[in-house]
Length: 199
Image (cartoon, rainbow, N blue to C red; front, side, top):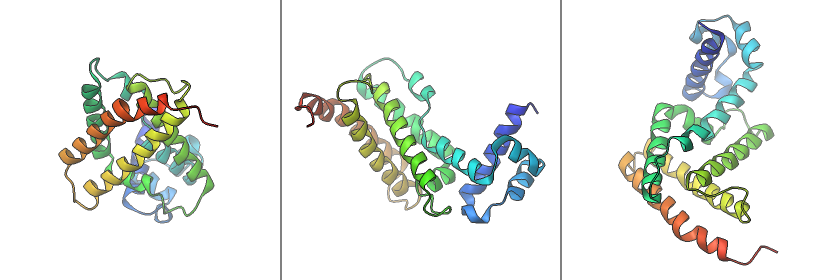
């Protein structure tokens, strides 16, 4: 394997293990055995187990720029529908790791994990703003980012209702999230942008 492929293979194996078991129950030896590599290769590519875990959380919770680039031209409803579909596909592919990442209890209270979660939320909110044609750098960018992060809280709750509790199915979650996103962008954002500047 090429080095990049090998690195991705280790990453995928580690993500699978961290999704299946608590952080404290996964060792670098376990990851190496799962990936079929020497333990030293994990340290070479990722540093410590903790650094690898933090990178997995970062990637699991950050919406990549590609997700915005693949959206079709067209009305907001279509773009929201495609964006939510992409998101639910991504969650389905990495269900256990996504669930572990949105509630990373295995590592204990960790300021760096909290910082990564906050950065992932902010960056993902910026991607959502770009997806609906708004600039995070606009005059109200900070408020709009905060609104999308609040929407993100609902996204995580809906994901748990679907994947953990089985109270909602994928189609119901899709409807909830796409309609809510359209309302947020079409009705709430304009009101926020019309409001008086913050003091």
